[in-house]
Image 1 (cartoon, rainbow, N blue to C red):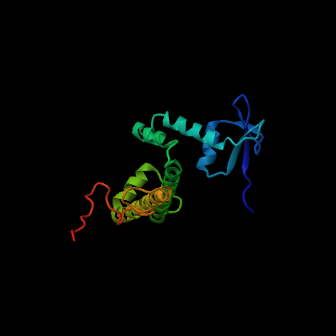
Image 2 (cartoon, helix red, strand yellow):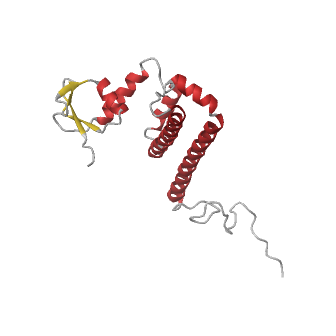
Image 3 (cartoon, rainbow, N blue to C red):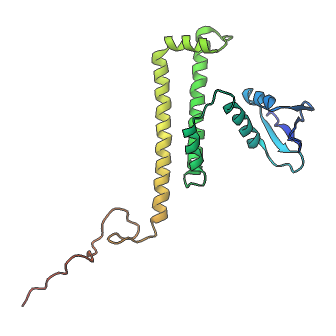
Length: 201
């Protein structure tokens, strides 16, 4: 039986009410649900509007302001520039796929750590460092696979953009090029070239 979605209601006073435990919770509690891979949804208590993304963004904002930020100012500026851009949807999908690929790689590394140190091993920073010192080749191979997958996703994004561009301009006619042809020059005479000379009889 599939797990039911845990419903959390947000009230006008900004308090969050967990309907499963019948108690008020904090953003820190919601963060714990995320870390535990819990399935939940945050809705406005009055309108029923889905506020899950808003709450997750608040958690990210608190984490970024907590002294150990993940995103640099340059990266955030680049992300802001994509809003309203034709590439916005494609970039969002690219980032989502990239993070999924990285998460899969991380899960494989954790499995390898447990296979070396035991199922009950706590994967902390010291254990990671020790493991990586002995697993250099395996780490390089896994990182290479991740980079290759990232490169493939970027290539697919570029191909999709090229296809959209061709479709966008396929109905236009440019001087010297037939309709629908992007690079093959037509046999139409150049209007700036000299006219052919008719030999005298």
